[in-house]
Length: 151
Image 1 (cartoon, rainbow, N blue to C red):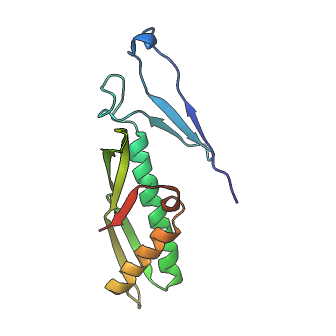
Image 2: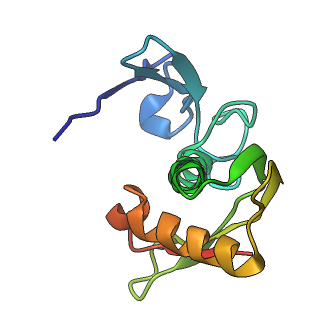
Image 3: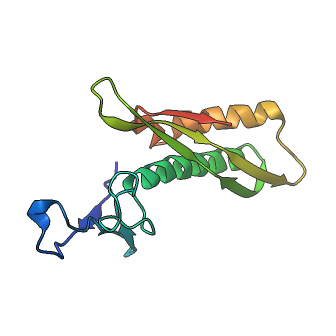
C-alpha cells in the first residue's frame, strides 16, 4: 500500500561514551522535511544525558495513537454528516512492566473534547459508535498491543 520513513540521527559529543556519560539527544527527520529534536524521557535517562524539552519516544507513541484516532474519527464524522469544529485530546500513556520485567506502554487513555455545529448533532450513542469505529479502523491501533480506551 505505502511506505513511511523516518531518519533518526545521533552523534557522540563527549569522550565518555564507554563510561555511559553521553548525551542521548538525537533528531527525527520526516519525509516532508520536518526535523524534530528527540531524547529519552528524563524518567528513563537523567539529565544532562536527556533533554526534557525534546520529544521522547513514549510521548511520540502516545501522540501517534491519539492523532490516528482523531484523524479516523474526523473522517467518519464527516461521512456521517456531523460537522466537527474542534477536537482536543489530552492523551495519557502508562508504562508498566511486562511478564519479563521489561517496561512498556501498556495502556493509553484518550480524553477527546469535541465541539460540533450544524443542523445534525451527534447523540451520545453516535459519539460512542464513532469512537468505536475510529479505534477499529485506526492504522496505529491495528499495529499495537497496547490497550487503548476513550473516556
